[in-house]
Structure formats: structure tokens, C-alpha cells
Image 1 (cartoon, rainbow, N blue to C red):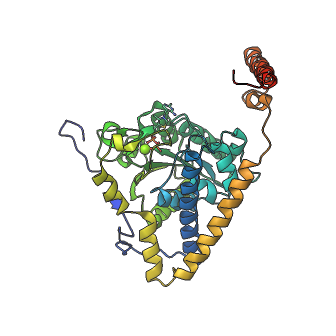
Image 2: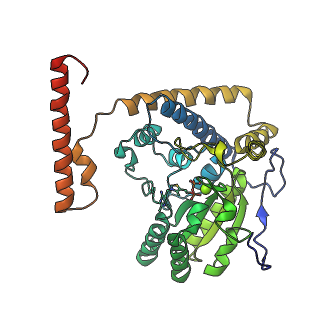
Image 3: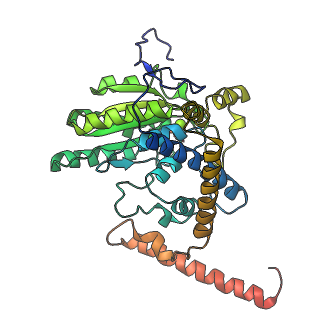
Length: 371
Ligand SMILES: Cc1ncc(C[n+]2csc(CCOP(=O)(O)OP(=O)(O)O)c2C)c(N)n1
Ligand SMILES: [Mg+2]
């Protein structure tokens, strides 16, 4: 909260399931198969996330950005995306990525350091992962503008973090989105931390959602750990966008239960009490309780899902670890249609250095000792 006395109220906080899985809002009419699918993706994402952390700790994966705690925000949002719509992600998207049909082996491959894991399969309307914070927001607006100009049917959902809302790209994107009236939904996964920077340092406003007012479109403030609320909010915003009524900003309040990335130690900047209070709001736990009360979740079904997830994870690790190494050239190829001279020089330099290293290594071997 800022130091002034100007404290306009943000939008109402939308929740359908409370932290214990009890209905506190209007129960949406969602088919049982869709509910089961939601639970599956959330559960599978959590298991795949846990495995990625283990792989990194075993030296089998590079830096990884975990999603634990954000499964409802991710699956609720991506399940609302329609066939003609587009998804424009940031970088902490394992859950949405899996749900969008990008195989786990691709996700693992990417975090193992092979950029080919970031290739989008044919027929999936996704932009690739964007690591530079917030740069995807204006891209999403451009994409939506293209849809509007061409008179196409889809809308665009772009996701970003709370930290991203301090970047110029965020404001420029929302401003253009509002003035152009394009079919885009801005979805902030407010996990309350940007590495070690807490939310209160990102904004003096009460909510991120209320920033939408200044750009001339609605803002929705939703419990990001409540998959039903996230799904409903995103679906209505995408419908609105497709009907030609322009953008919406959604703020999904959630929490990153794990570290920022595997290179981070969150115990240095946040308390155990804070962590425990959010563990109590676990999105999976509450959704499972809701499904159990409806007679959808059973222990037998859970066992089936555990087995299915384990099998898929084992296969993905096996596949990702056995992909043929790519050539040096491939690292340089995709930036420009025609490679500029300085990039070509850098590529040649790297190739020469690697060749020389190989020669050195051979000499060491011949000598048969340590250098
Ligand atoms: C333009 C830019 N600045 C800094 C970074 C380093 N960086 C990576 S993630 C991150 C924090 C992002 O926080 P947030 O937007 O809240 O997303 P979260 O990591 O919480 O998902 C920063 C500063 C970057 N990748 N890009
Ligand atoms: Mg964040």
C-alpha cells in the first residue's frame, strides 16, 4: 500500500471454492469429464514439477522454474482457451504447457538446455516461452490486433507475473490493447514474489486488477488457487474478447510455494509462517475435496492417476535424455532469416574453440594423465 490516502477499492475478490474445498460462490455448470480433466492436469503438473526439481538436483537438468502452488491458476486459465484462441506465455508455465499439448519430454528437453524443446507442435496456437520479463505482453496485443484486422475468430490469452507489471512493456501492452480494442486477455499470475522482491514493492495499488480501469477495460480479481473461479473468469473474459468487446485484465492471486528457480533459496527472504499459511490454501487439496464431496474423486481413481503420471514422467525423462545433441550451427540459426556477419563470426569462433578443445582433450588422453 502506498503512503498517500488515496485508496480506491479494487474489484471484488471472486472465489467459488474456499481453502477447504467448500462452495462459497455459485457452483458453475461444468461437465464431470471436464472437472476430471482439470484435476488430472493439476495433479500431473505437480508430479512433473517435483520430478524436474529432482532431475536438477541430480545434475540432469539445468535451471528450472517450478510451478508448485500455481496449478489452479495455470490449468484453470489454459483450459478456458478455445480452439481458435492463442496462448502467449511467460516462462513458469509447465502446467499450462502440458495442458496445451506440449509433451512433457519437450518441457524437460528445454530445461535440460536444448532450445528445440521450445518448438511448438504443429496445430498448437502457442507462442514460445518468453524469458525476458513482460516482453510477451505487447506481442500478445500485436497478435490480437492481427486477428482483429483479418477478421479471424480467436482471442489471445497472455500470462505474466506480478513482477512483470512493473515493466514498461506491461503498460504499453495494456494501453494499446485498450485503445485498439483488440481481443486479448491479460492474465497476471500474482504469486506475490518476483524472485526476492515482494508484491508491495511492485505496486502502491491495492490490487493489480484495478489497473485495468486506467486502460479502459474491466479488471477481475480472482482466487488463483481456486481452479473453478479461475476457469470461469478466464472463460468469460475470452468470450467477451471474441465478441469484439475488447480486453480484460485478470489478476489471479496465488503463491509460489517453491523457489523462484533452482538457483534461488527463498528461505533467505520469506518466512516459514508465510509459506505454511499458503500451503494451507493448496489448490490441489481443495479441488480434490470438492470432487470427493461430489463422489468424483475416489482413492481408486487417484491410484490410477498416480500410475499414469509416473509412466508418462518416466517416458518423458527417457526421451529427453536420449535426444541427439544439436549442432553448434543450430544455436545461431533461428534469430535472423539471413545470418548477419557478426553472428556468423561468433559461430565460427565457437566452432573453432570447440575443435581446439577437442584436440587438447585428445592430447591429454594420449599423455594418459591429468593436465
Ligand atoms: C527484462 C528482464 N529483467 C529481469 C529478468 C530476470 N528475472 C527473471 S524472472 C524475474 C522475476 C519475475 O517475476 P514475476 O513477473 O512476478 O514472475 P514469477 O517469476 O514470479 O513467475 C526477473 C527479475 C528477466 N528475465 N527479464
Ligand atoms: Mg511473481
